[in-house]
Each structure stands twice: as C-alpha cells, then as structure tokens.
Image (cartoon, rainbow, N blue to C red; front, top):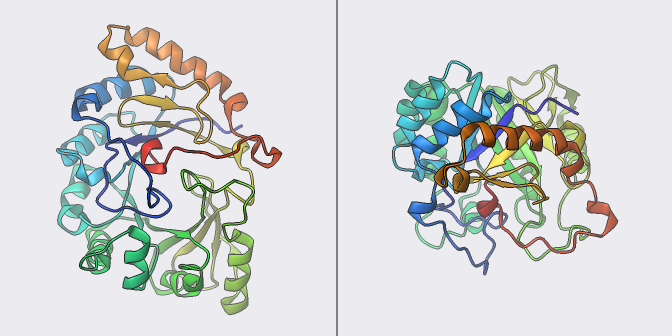
Length: 328
C-alpha cells in the first residue's frame, strides 16, 4: 500500500460545462449552497491543523470547475505558501484559463491538468453538453496560454468514450511528439450514468496502446506520475502518454489519495462511502482540530480495507452520484 499523502480538494461543485461523464444528461444535480461550502479560512485550517500534521503534503484543486471559485488565485497563493506544501496542482476544463493562467502561476501553482476530450469542435461541444457557440477555441487558447506562461508539466486529460471520440486517439497522442505535453487517456467510468460496472461501455487502455504502438511504436517512459497512470512514450517524442485504467485494471493497492468535497466531506475512496467524515460539521460545531486530526488519522489507517475492490463481484449495482458531486 502506497503512503497516502495526496489530497484532492474540490473547491466548488458547480461547473460551466456539463460533460457526459461528469454530469450526464438528465442527471438531477443539487448544488451546494454557498453557506455550506468550506470557506477559505476553514479549508486552510484543515490543511494546517489536520491534513499536514498527519502526513499530507501534495494537493490538487478540483471542482466542479475550480476557476469558478471566487478568490481562487488568493487561495492558491495561501496553499502554495504553506512551508509543508510539496506539490500543488489543479484540474480545470480550461475555459477560463487564458485570462487566469499568469496570475495562477505567479501565485505558486506549477502544474495543471486540462480536459481536452476532442480536437474536433463539434465533438467537443457534444461531450461538454454545449448547445451554443463552440467553446473549443477558448479551451485551446487556455492550453496554449498555460504552456507559454510556464506550466510544466502540462497535462491533457482525455476521457475516451466509445463511438464519440475514440477514433481521435492517434491525433491526440500526436500532440506529445513535438510538444512537452503529457496526454492522459482515461477509461470512461460509469459513475452516475445509469450504466452497470460490468457493461462494456468503455475502451480498454491496452486497446488504445495497441493502436498507438502500430502507428509509431511505444515504450514505457522512465518517469512515473503521482497518480495511477501507466506512463509510456512514443519513441523520440518530447511528451508522454499516460493511461488510467480504472475499468480494466484494479489499482487500489497503488491508491495514495483521499478526496475532500467542497462541503467538507472527506472520502477515503472514490467508489466507497464507508468511513467518510463531515469535517465542516466538526469545525462548525466546535470539535477540536486535535479530535478531527485523530479521526482523519484513523481513516488513513483503515483505508486499505475501505478501498473499493469488489467491482467484478457484481455487488455494486448502479452508482448514482455524479463525478461533479464527488469532486473528481
């Protein structure tokens, strides 16, 4: 079992996209009321007094869309300024990034993952649920700006959806040849989509690797990221290709993270709600940070038993919560 030192922090559950894999068509979303969100001060208190003392040193800001959070640049600066912060990154859809990249970089953010599920504007708009003016170019501008500002590594996340964008895999992989970009192909995960886990509604990472291998060749990269991606490289390419295979492989034994929702729920496992703690309620009801620290420490100790490993057993049935509600 890996050391658990990586916390994914959802800053807000709202998003300006409605992606198929995150907020499926017809899904009813009950957004968190503003007063129920963790405040900046509450979040910083939890980081300084609870999470860092029990060993968390790496943080990723997520959503929803984290750039929608008011004052996000100041919050980034505050977290980056903590002496114990070894790594601070963000996952964004990139729509607002062109105007914010420089400020975020100067605030201390150094790594960013941007969702780019298609190079075709029509397909892109279909995936993100956009029915108005295409948003692809604004996202592409955000990617270019982030790269120019200095974000390195710059990672592009692609959720591969059968019959939608799976035929673009080679075009997307080619982005890594001349640029120091890191493209990550993510198996489509049926959370909140009304799909059973044993339905084959996804394309396996090995199938994608084989397509790339036939076109250019493929070798394992000498570097490995913080997360569950298996990292490869087209021979001679500047960037890398990552494959996150949560459907075709179980990587629970490599899990090094917990997730904090925008309203303060700490989840030890993406697909298992057992053991989750309402830290916001604890803070607001006067529970001491020492007691909260003990609760989180206990959860760390039992995380290997909580990690979700029964997917293939058929015991899961349907999973009703959407990714936007879970927090990435």
